[in-house]
Length: 503
Image (tube, rainbow, N blue to C red; front, side, top):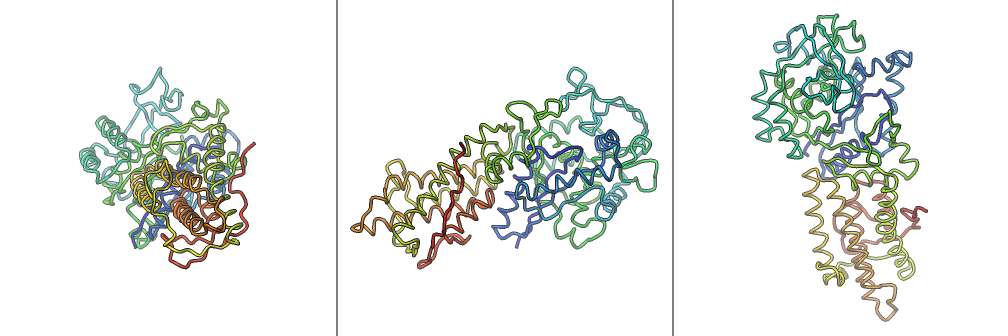
């Protein structure tokens, strides 16, 4: 059994989760579920980054204690497990003094040779939780957050990134540290050229909410050094060596493009300094806008996953995020486009297919079908189709697998719908409802073939829309295995519409 360790980024709980992080955690969930189906031993980690200036100031603004503030908001992120049907195995919080702090401090000590004190004056963007260069500003503002950075003058600890730049470049160029998609690889190699030593602490008088620097109570660990450590502390670094050795290195860090440099430059440098293996790959998705506008608290256009799910249901929201939005590019969330996808793809295509096949088995076979391979249709599946049933499934499965391996989840899901569309065209062409008692073999050939298509489609669908795949399987008595043995009985249970059309 292979191990598969996947992580999401850990967002700041200084507000409610929005649909942009919903995309990331659903993408990671699909990959985790897919690898479980392959038989891998999977560990799926998510969590929250509870330190940093933005959390510190937000709690102060509300007039509540820091721990109380993060306890309340972090619970909303943990709740995504139920809201979006996420199968994560662990949820790490950076304020956890038992599970996270010991490992974060051990990591500091492991990097001590490359950490040095320095008087520094620079520009600090609270939104990025990072020092920024003046040359990177647009009209004096951070291009990411459209705010003016603060002038900061203080004594911090810095990390010798310069010592590791050449090695990181070689690791990325050789794909030993794989960056997906390839365009992001080129982007990070360009950023690496100008990368400088970076701050890894802040003075406690400026921000007291954080992990103390070992042997220097006047400083707390800078949020990125603390936060990036979650990927190893959650699996035992600093407290459970056996667990850590079992799961590390991560197979995939799933992150948004805005934090790529921290994961592909800072994090590898820290790990190299500490003598630890690097993650195998970093999968990078784009940003999600709302009706064409950037998500912004000031614009009031933030949509939470919970609000969307209450309106349309879990699987329709998952489907939209995974199908409408390219896995690696920017995308847009729109209730109008979600409704179009719902009615077109879910209700008319898949839902209608399942309902009418179930009805035909109920009315013409008393609700039962004994599978017999001899009735699988090896002829062409209709005038507009150029492949037979078995060939079509084989082709779709191969293309689906390739898309999954290349982090093109939207393409993999599209391939599944290609199979369902094929099934709809096939059934329209064969017209089994018109078969009378004089053509029983023709009817059995059509229904056996269609049922086989639906079964395989539901199997491919399971990582994406687990509830829907489960309902289809229960409706027909499917198991989750590939293929169907002769003699297996499929019994149609009472079938409710999978996706009632929206008015």
